Length: 136
Image 1 (cartoon, rainbow, N blue to C red):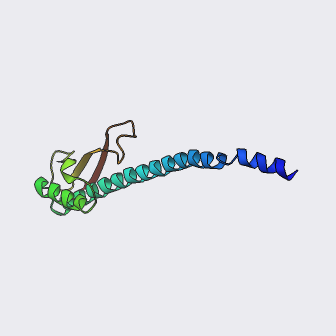
Image 2: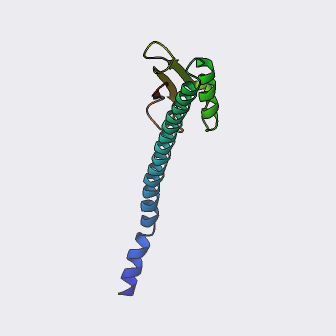
Image 3: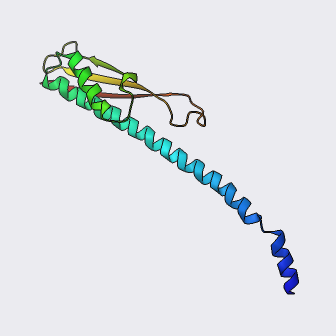
């Protein structure tokens, strides 16, 4: 009886190793996708916050300084780990004037490149953030 059990266990020695390796590949893939999704959400958050900061700056300065607003947005976004030269910034006045009580719009566009571009199908994704406030 003992001999038969010993022979059966000897034939199944590598089974656990193979199953572990197969599951390890799946687990690593899921972890990398979670990391990538987190980085994408962080990028969106940085863009949205930078747009809001630009709108605040434009409101305080009555929107008359679009170049200063762009500089403020780039300075704010530079605190993150993103390439600020890839961010395009547009400061516009939807109502035709920057003077109060008109609106000021700051729009940011950033070409998001995945952290692992070899393993993710889409080469780039364009992220977009916009902020609007009434200048008073």
